[in-house]
View 1 (cartoon, rainbow, N blue to C red):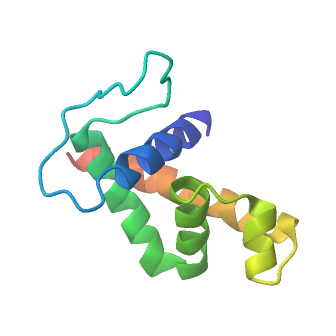
View 2: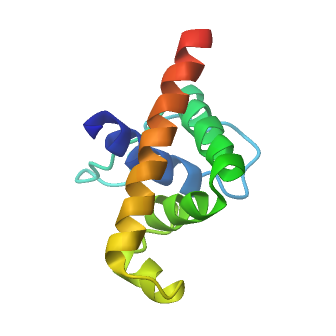
Amino acid sequence: MKDILYLLTAWGHWSGSRIGTEYKAAWPIVTASSDIRPMLSDEDGEIVDRAVGRLKVFDPLGYDIVVAYYRGKASCRGIGREIDRDQKYVTAILTRAEAYIAGQVDAILVVA
């Protein structure tokens, strides 16, 4: 499960930097010498992006939470306040969504 957390964190950085661009990025792009954020290649980013997209069909709330948490860098507590739910509820949905995405990434890699 630790690998999927790393992948989703890197996906959040990858997808956030892709907004409004039509050209593939040349990773890794280092903006500062102390930049140690996890990054993905475009190929890996597209795999994770496809898995996250599949989550939207299976669990729309989980998708919204994953996007808010990993792309928007919102806390579980903040997300809970927005949807009028407890932080534990949001954490449970996030954990379930991460497990689903991990399974989808594995399935995509087996097919490829």
